[in-house]
Image (spheres, rainbow, N blue to C red):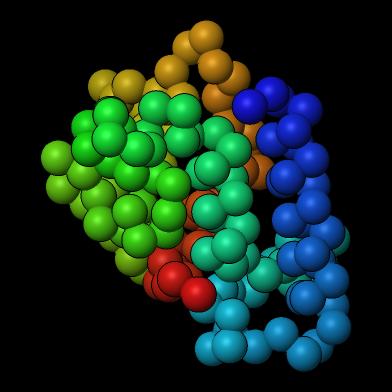
Length: 140
């Protein structure tokens, strides 16, 4: 999937998230997401659906189907939460201990995902996953 399409998916998710956050009607228990402060001083909602859209746009080329690398299936939130052959990649409520974020950032000693020549995830994309994990990583 091209970079342009991934940016459109992210932009759409951000517009939806901002609209829900500003409506005053979005409730964390109903959406499975969380609110967080944004640079504009408002709140944004991060949902499992938004995280799923990002993973599908950026990760499923290698992490889906019968040949999923590391047996890590990122084509569904359930697969993401289950983890792969090396165990869980998400620690619900604790993004700092979640392997997936270390790989997304390319922390020292960890292989960056997606690997080159693919473009790395943007800071905004990584922050979205981080916020969702810190909120409890709940499926909708």
